[in-house]
Image 1: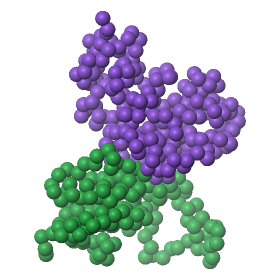
Image 2 (image 1 turned 60 degrees about the vertical axis):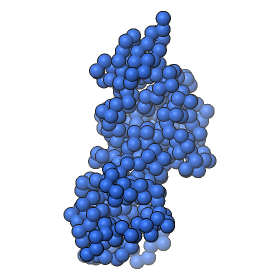
Image 3 (image 1 turned 90 degrees about the vertical axis):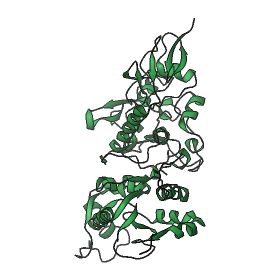
Image 4 (image 1 turned 30 degrees about the horizontal axis):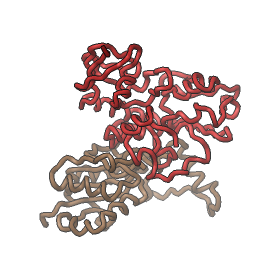
Length: 239
Length: 179
């Protein structure tokens, strides 16, 4: 007999070894997320996929599915927490959407739309973050990095290169590049690498492609992230 | 005094794009004019707010005058709405937050291309610039928000009709945009 748990009252089948988010996605149920990607080792850092498992808050992307779990995802309380988390991400970095070429294709923005977020609630940090435009084809704008480590994982697990890591702690945490100079141009990164295309925000961008699709006609302008995520198996695909 | 709903509007550190977008409610403006009256607004040229029902704030807060205007709006308006990206998070003017103010002024008035008679304006009547451009919710309590750069005419219509008809304003997915 197939094993199953209940998610918002719905019976979700799973196989041994699956996480809650994997089983939910397979059953066509979207759980908001940013650092999760089905192709990579779970990270559990963004906390957007927080759900209540038998009354306790857990990250759906790291928590293993088990028989008879009672899981709550789409409650007012949990979605309010998710919105606050997203607002914290917006004020910690510098996410000025009108000036960002990822706008409309950005998963951070799309999750915020999905959560009906209309303001940032908290005081803004306006932290000074750097720009690395040294690479001929790829740009890093640290203002928009949310430390999800998808580029770190993609570079290690798919490209076999180890180009990225997170350095520093707390407020000084930042994405670092594996090169003697710390600059992207001196790293092994190539524009064809998965790590150059995986960023859910506008932190890692491919140069000269940003406006190929006009604002207003982009992925999340057409379809909300819960629909896109379930058809592409991830937060969204790069355009 | 008529019984019409009184609305005040202002553009702080904004570009007036949100005000232009407000006018994009097009022919609905005539319907709107039957029930509302504008108080202080760039559309009326009234200098100070009377008692108002709704205040619309475009733009972030970049100088001391913006702070005074915003506080006047908060004092005089029962409901205050932050309109557009700049009011909500500082927007494009907040790009200067990452450059020391002295360097910004130097680039504009001393060392910039084509500057004649270089001097930093220091007239006492000029409002002092803040070190950073701030979203309006960091200065006063804001009741509702209209995201967008600019929010579309439909966003104005939805939020204002919700308010005028006594509902809590809410935006459907297709009206929430940050760009």
